Length: 328
Image (tube, rainbow, N blue to C red):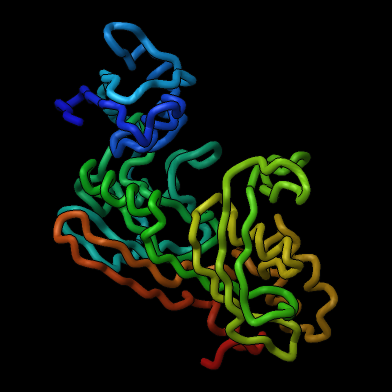
């Protein structure tokens, strides 16, 4: 495979022969998703011997493709936001930040100028633009009400290198969650296909068992760290995949929703607590009790493994102590 600045030449190998074109293109570091691949095909930007190809095309080994990548989208309407951020690491390639709960990662409906991206634009000189994305630098995400570690790319080469690690599941990601109840076992693996909930579009759900799987495969390895007399447990979750709401869905479907997670049943139980002070503290919680504690990945330039650990931010340690889950 060779490429110029904005044109890719791809030769189909034996392992890719017979696969859909959009699936093949999605593996390229400058494309990275089937959605983007489909956009390229729909725009007539993917050709073979001068003939434009559809996303559903299946090709033979040895066939050559020319992919004309559009110029990167230059974001002009994003405004820097003077918001304090906690940086764990920064160099010319990337930045590692400890995201606070309550902060949306990138611009979306209802959040145009009050996101982590806006804050990064205030603090960081350069962020990668990627391909047709209004999310400069963003390699992966955390939910708004989840705190913890994120890595952000400063250039397209670093972005592609980091994205490849996430795609190939070589990134080490560990979360901690305070949940309702006590799991029946000390640990295990939750594996399902996640899709949009059929009646509530804000939620995700696993495909029903006994049916053809729909959605994307999601795998969460979990371990019970501690169970308290108050009826809570602190669990560690290690992600093998990184789907939207993955940990929240898997724990909820196990019967142990995350404390504070109103979307997946983690708030209503507070009314049954006998401890009035604890009941009030949980009911007034303005976040979910989920924290991205550990992140480790290979640096795109040096090839060295970088590892980061972040403790629970205030005031969560005091709440977890009152729940009997940690000792402060």
